[in-house]
Amino acid sequence: MLAFSHELVRRLLDTKRLEIRPGTTERVIWLLSQHLLTQKRGASLISALSAALLSFPEVEELYADDEELRDLVTDLGL
Image (cartoon, rainbow, N blue to C red; front, top):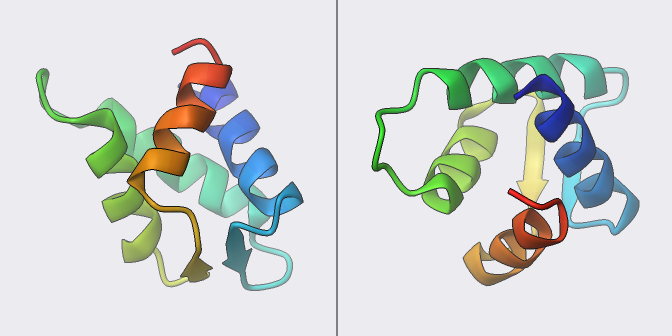
């Protein structure tokens, strides 16, 4: 889950769909991976992603909607 979170956060940052406080990239990646590991089976991955990212104090803004997140997840092969 850490590798997936790393790639997803990097792509969101590279495409300007995510704004985080400077110097917190690795922490956001780690928090996201830990959050996803604790999700219940059957929960929507896309909803979990957006809710998790928006709940982290390090995240200033998430510009990607659920459809864009779904496309990114599909591109990552998950």
